[in-house]
Length: 406
Ligand SMILES: Cc1ncc(COP(=O)(O)O)c(C=O)c1O
Image 1 (cartoon, rainbow, N blue to C red):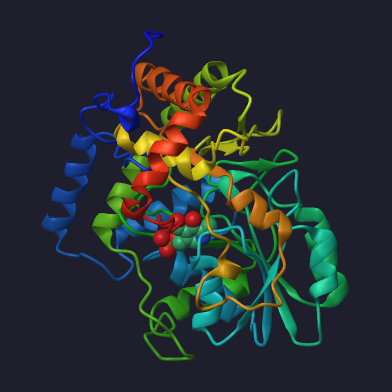
Image 2: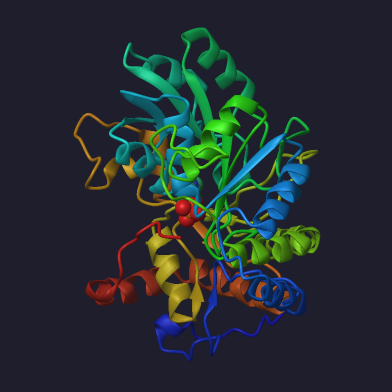
């Protein structure tokens, strides 16, 4: 590791990286195989409408997750909408606030009211103890989020949903390849929804999937994804155009083939960060449950503010000056965002976690040298908190605010 003391860029030094090293660099797999698939698609002349590549992708995803049905979609946001509509959600849906805004938007767009629940301080996923207290006669569904691939308390939530007669769905956008108590994410609740957005561990440029073991539910979602048509193209219900394209599915298949290596490299990256960041008092690297499978797609640290002025936002800016594009995933809590903010919302754990979290670059394009350098920069910034925070205070007006964007 490069231990040479140097001036941080915020203190006047040159940026460590001469090009951006960012969170969410796409994982595209074997380009030849992808291009081969694209040529086949063009030769065949079917670009969409449940073509053979989409069908193959759905089959491979279902096999990988051990579920009976996979209905691919053009993104996870519409997948969530289809799933919520298919369970007949009306009135209120209980969701965490510590998530990407799409979880709440999907419900809200359907005219449902997202009721925000705080998270468990240890798992940072929706707190089952608090969920129960939020259930009212208007509640029709609970939508948990496996945040950063860390599974929700699936069994406790299932029990609560069952006891109250409400639907249970999971936003599994981050959790492809993860397990809860040894069981693959994908089979929990009535359905789970994955994202294959370009920044995810498996991507189809844009894309998502609703997966379920319930045949009737699968048939409903499949029809709703295609304007509410059945196999004979008769319109049976309200529907959307939420179909994945053939070229998207070609990328999905190619990136799925790369997935074993993606996990291997991500795990190695995570362990490298663990080693390099150890002993920095302000930094806690969020660990994963031992004995479970993870995709390690998100390397997340929590920054404990100190009296010298080190905060998550100070560190974010200090890294940005070095060309390290970390992300404040997920900040601020959705309950504070304009469409949802209300004085009654009090979610102290979400507020605390959201103000401290920072996702660091990982993925197959991230090298050990980059991880060493990023960790060294974090160590240097935390060790020079007073100078760094003072300097940034002067520049505050130029700082972008957190968006929690993808
Ligand atoms: C937790 C969560 N839910 C839903 C989504 C929406 O996924 P998509 O971009 O595929 O619509 C995202 C996207 O990053 C997400 O992080």
